[in-house]
Image (cartoon, rainbow, N blue to C red; front, top):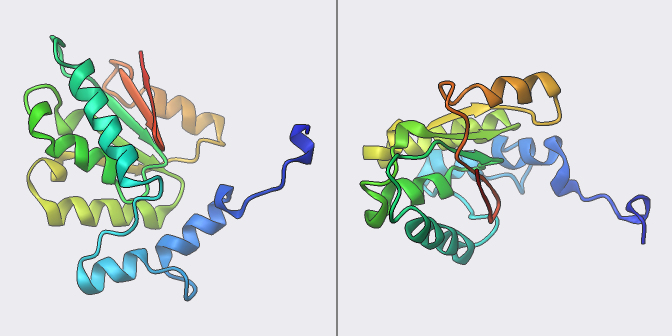
Length: 163
């Protein structure tokens, strides 16, 4: 099978994620549900994946001398970064102010910010911004948005890259 033979998935489109988070059809409930009843939404790649990633970071950062700059690509509702920030075993190893979640869905960013504010504590300090990684200028801007230090850890749906 070649790349050209692969079927397109609507999960790979900005339009799909905008509809999920912005509540433009009956299947789109994330922002409205959080606003109405406080449900933070789905963990699209599974709670078990989040737990494994957090445990990996606990082990990896055990002897770290500096707190890393962490970037989460396509952060959705921000769940992974919230889990990292709230992990007791990482309390002295990570700094929420050095975490950034990006997504190309404005509604997703709005949801993550609202969830962070509602959770309070460290979660309020995590930054979230709209960023379309399909745009080269946006990627260049993002590369420099870690206060000039670069990104030490980059996450994307269950994948952790350590630099």
